Image 1 (cartoon, rainbow, N blue to C red):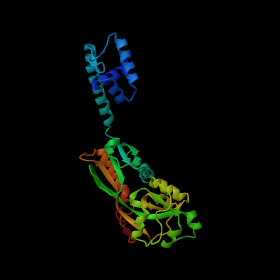
Image 2 (cartoon, rainbow, N blue to C red; image 1 turned 180 degrees about the vertical axis):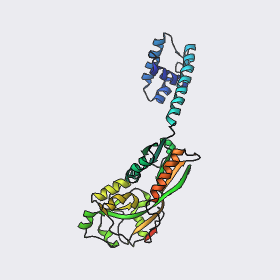
Image 3 (cartoon, one colour; image 1 turned 90 degrees about the vertical axis):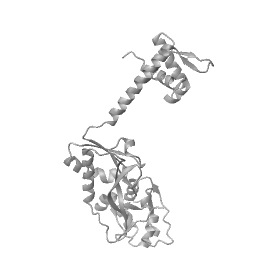
Image 4 (tube, rainbow, N blue to C red; image 1 turned 60 degrees about the horizontal axis):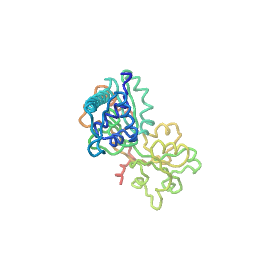
Length: 312
């Protein structure tokens, strides 16, 4: 086994499967000369030819030895690939992987993990993040936590919790701007924008008369976490998901200049499992824990909150 030229065998198996050196090179993402060199090295190591020129001199043919080795190497590599894939997909019964967007992981999930570890020391929880709304199975995850307006096709989706949109700004900027407290003050405040379609400043027009105010001005950021960090730095006013900004608001790092103004986001966060998959006991335990954590914050719509309009 130690002496087998494995790279050369893999290259030859690709030549055998695809019927030529050029298609094998494209498949392996190497140069034509690299595949040819591997084949020559394998022929030299075996001491016999594996390929011969075909009738057109452009199409290769396999010697009897080449046919035999091609079939054996291709079958062996396929079996190996299936075994490796099975090992990667299989998980210990106590291992659970959750996929979510970075902002939710950083600002809501991670601060609660000590509680999870204390309650479930026997469950090995892993978190993967992606800005894209991917299928959890694409990342090897058991389920994902999505932000937005679900449900989504090809997934079994159930709501996790609501949220509210609230304007927030740094205490320093709030003081510099003279403690703005009226909606008219928006005209003179720098605005920060999140690419999340649920948190656009244009949606604010549904509860506040903003005639003549340019709500498109200001810098844009690719995640809710970046928008909140920019607000903490005093770069402007962010329209934030209250659950994600809760720690900064509690610490007074961020202030809500317009306490009475907020937009309700019903079913703002979702649990999404691959369609038709029955979750394991450990996965159910994690989901139940998430629901318990979500219920520890108020879920009723505040009396002064209004539903957010559908994003256009």
